[in-house]
Each structure stands twice: as C-alpha cells, then as structure tokens.
Length: 335
Image 1 (cartoon, one colour):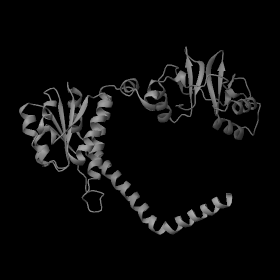
Image 2 (image 1 turned 135 degrees about the vertical axis):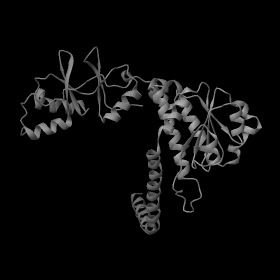
Image 3 (image 1 turned 90 degrees about the vertical axis):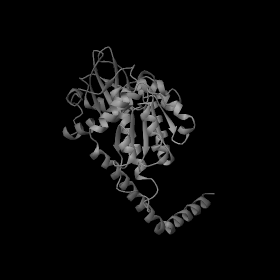
C-alpha cells in the first residue's frame, strides 16, 4: 500500500513538471490581472472629491429606501450593493431596470433615493427611467463611466467610476469597470456606516444566523480562558516566569499584585530578557514586563474583541473587570 502511494506521488510530481511550461504563463497572466485591477481601483481614490461626500449625505438623509437599479453585469453589481447597504443599516433593495417598466416602478416612492448603474451612461433601459424619476422629484445618483453621458447629465449626483480599459484581452468583457463600480458602492456603504455610527451590535441584529451571527452574539466571557491562568507577582524571577509561561501555554504571563493587573510578560520579552541579562534567571519580572497590556471586559462582543486584536496586532487580550481585576485571557477567537 505504501509503495503504491509513493508511486502515485511520483507520477503526480512528473505530471506537474510536464505541465509547468504551460502553467507558468497562466500564473504570470493572473498576477498581471490582479495588478491591473488593483490599479483600476486605486485610480478611483485619486478622483474622489466632494461629489462623493454629497452622495453619502444624500443616501444618509434618505427617509425611505436606497433603490439600486441596473441591468446585465451592472445589475449583478447592483444586487450585491443593495445587499451590502441593507446589511449595514441602510434599507435598500434592487430593482431590475427592464422590470421597472412592467410594474416595478411602483416599488419606488418619493421618500427613496435611486442609484442607477451604467458604465456607458447610455444603457437604454436605464435612460428611459430618468423622466419618470424626475417627474416625481425622486433623488438620483449614478455610478457611471462617462461624465458626459446622458445618464451622468440626467441625475442629481454622478459618480465617476471610469477605467482606462478592461483587463479582458479583447477589452470587451466588463471586468475593471464592474470592479470599479463595486468598489465605489462599497465605499459609499462604509461612509454610511460611519455616518450612522453602525456598530458590531447593530450588525449582529441584522445577521442572526450562521457562524458570523454566532460571533456577533457571543460575548468575550463565553470564549475566554478563565482557568489555570499563568499568573505571577511582580517579585517573581525570570526563571519562575519561564516555567509559568511554559505551563500556561498562552505565550504570555500575567503579572498581578493585590488582585490587580500590573503588567504582562510575553514570550518575546522573555527571549529578549535572556539575551540582555545573559540568562540571569534571578532578575524580577517587574523589570521586563509590559505595563500597558491590551485589555477587554467580559461583556465585550467577541466580534469587537477580534477587530481590536486584528487592528492592533495583539496575540491576546487580558479580560478584566472592576478596574484591573483579571478574570481571563482571550488568546484567539473560538467558533
């Protein structure tokens, strides 16, 4: 059986070597695609001006829904954006541009704002909507690739999502252009989250299901390690700290005095202390501990704690209550 596996592995390796000449150009092409698309999105950042701010405030002031409208590939992008808006505190839904003329215009009210997506700005089904929206004084925003187009001139706020070209070898298939529209829409969603002060607990209410929902409902107290914590007083020695760290298996030791957290010694500090003090195991941990370790309370949402750990690049958070009383350690997010 083992010989069979070895031969199978060797055959697979030979096959990969034989394919290498054909695979290498594809890999290079994929890398080039990513670089071109990244450049297309980066170009948007350089063009953002007050028009973007006006669009954000218009959407924020909308009393009803943000209606996203498109057709074809732009319609698919519009469906995603409507879902993103709705899931981040901005009531929103998608209306297909063609279906709008067969009754779906009734879904749009004067309390709504309509976001129209058309890269050319001349998409017939989109342009035909303008007179109906204007007649009802419904505010409009466009994600458009040509500011001189009929659509850009016919809406209240046009947002430029133009790109130099598509990454498609024939410069035909919507690729960079759809990505730019998606990125602009996401940027608007993020701005609206800030304007609404949309917090993790708000997100939790809109995402009750699945692993994400569980994480957003879970508190730190339900995921922290509360037993057998590696704790030492400030007078403990480096040698004692090494043993406690090894037994604790958290990559750190809590330094506690009179029940209050006074510092933390992480593995990196231990190694550095060993080098600086020529492995002198008698020095007190008070000389090598970190005085301002990152902390969190037991009632903090796990999603918020995870965000802090990621943004601040912390490997752990000390869980405290009643000031600096240690009750646990959150060293990683547990599903």
